[in-house]
Length: 171
Image 1 (cartoon, rainbow, N blue to C red):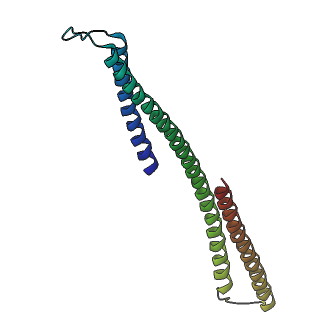
Image 2 (cartoon, rainbow, N blue to C red):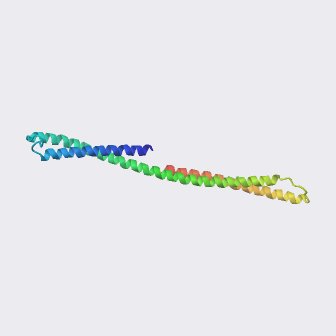
């Protein structure tokens, strides 16, 4: 918003300078081409015309320089706006990927929670204690595997986020 406001301000200044320069150039043309006053029909001396044209030409050159400087400033601000837009797009893409990773982590955590809950279910009418022990060991193994997977996903997410930040800082 600040950069856009700056662009708007510079553009308005440029318009004003262009209007002033056009007026000056018109006055220069008038004194250059006119030998007598159109209102009172008196002659305009050559020395006076030369003096006015010289002063107004100098002012016109100053305005030309200022106009070029403002045009350069506008180009720089437009380039900055383009870069800001590109960075915003990159941030948006990163936020989408972070959301995807967070969803994967949440799904893994829900599955782990479900496995834990299943491991805590009281066993009724146990016919074979050895079979139940084996089931618990299997659930514990699944839980261990899921915990490792979750840890790997979190580590990959952190690495990926760091890489993206490094890429953004590099540009």
